[in-house]
Image (cartoon, rainbow, N blue to C red):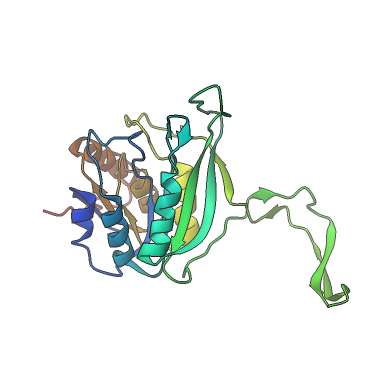
Length: 265
C-alpha cells in the first residue's frame, strides 16, 4: 500500500486531487484557535467543499472536533461545521458520535461541569458502502435466552424466535478512549488517539481503500491506515509536523513496505 504525504495548504492541495478518489476521511482539525498549526489558519468552507468533491459515492468522512468556551459561552463551531457539510456540501449526517476522553477532563470555569468529550460527526456521500460495526460491547445478559420478532397492530409478537444472547454486541456511538494511550513519545500539542483512528478506519472502510487526513498532524491516521492495509493520503502545512508524521508511519511499516511513501514533488 502507498502513502502520499503532501505538504502545503490543505484547501489548495485538496484541489489537486481527483474527484471521487477517497473512500474515507478521518481527521481532527484545529478548532476555535485552541490548536494552531504553528500559527497557520485554515479555510473551513473551502476544505469542506473539496472533501465532498474528492469523496467517492458511498464514502464517509469522520470529522472529530470540539468547541471552545468564549466569554462564558461555547462557540458551537462544531455544529455549524456539521450543518455546513450537510446543507451546503450535500453530505448525509450519518451519525453524531461522542468521543469521551477517559482519565482526563478540563474545566474552563467553576460554572460548568468538567469537559471530557468531543464530537465525531460521521458524514456520508450517499449510503455508506462500508459499514463494519465493531462488536465489543459487553452484554450483561450474555448466555440468556431472549425472544425477538415483530409485533402486530394488537401488540402481539409474531414471527417470534429465540436466541442466546452473545457475549458481546455492537458498541454504542459513545466511545470511551484515553486520549494519551500510545507507545511512543510523539511531540505534538494535540495528538489524535490511535484507537480512535483505527476504530473508525475499521468501521467505515475495507482493505485497499484510500484514506485521507487533510490535517495530518503527527500522522496517527496514516499510521493506522498503513497497519490496516489501506492506501493513505495525508496533507500537512507544517514541515515540522510532516516530519513527525513521516517518521511515525515509516517506523510502523519498516517490515512491511520499504517503499511506502510516494511523496509528491
